Each structure stands twice: as C-alpha cells, then as structure tokens.
Image (tube, rainbow, N blue to C red; front, side, top):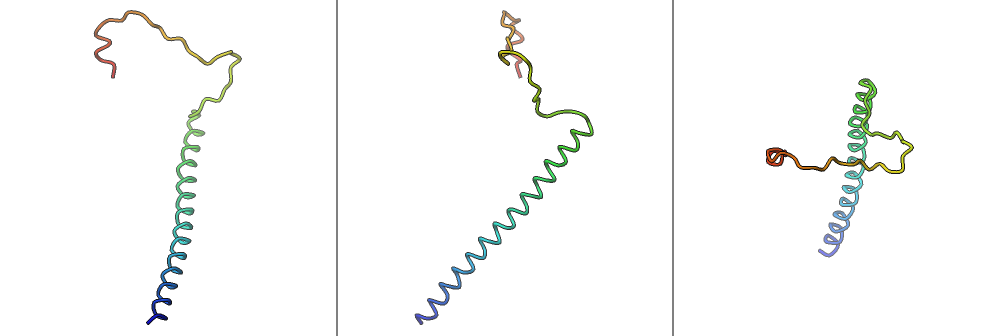
Length: 82
C-alpha cells in the first residue's frame, strides 16, 4: 500500500511539472502570435496611412508645457463638459 501511495505521489508530481511546462510553452507561443499580429498589423496600417501613433519629434524648447486659456466662460459651457 505504501509503495502505491509513493508511486501515485511521484506520478502526480511529474504530471504537474509536465503540465506547467506545457502551459508555459503554450502561453509563450500564443503571446508571440498576438504580439506579432496585433502590433504588426497596427504598424502596417500606420505605415500605409502615413500616420504616427507616438510623436517623437523633439523641439528646441525649454519646456513642453502648454499654457491654457483661463478665463470666465459662459455658465452653459460648464454644465456640458462631457
């Protein structure tokens, strides 16, 4: 009886290790496919359309801060902000 229990414990431990390894491989493959399809298609569409998603052009300015126009607005503008 003790040999059977020892065998089943080792069997379960081995299958657990195999299961974790297979799950890691499947996750890696699926994430690679999603990355290359998702990012690759977005890259192709932006290149075809000529647009950019991230603006990396550097300007010779001290700050990128943009001043806001602050003043009194019509009260109706405050009610419908969204």
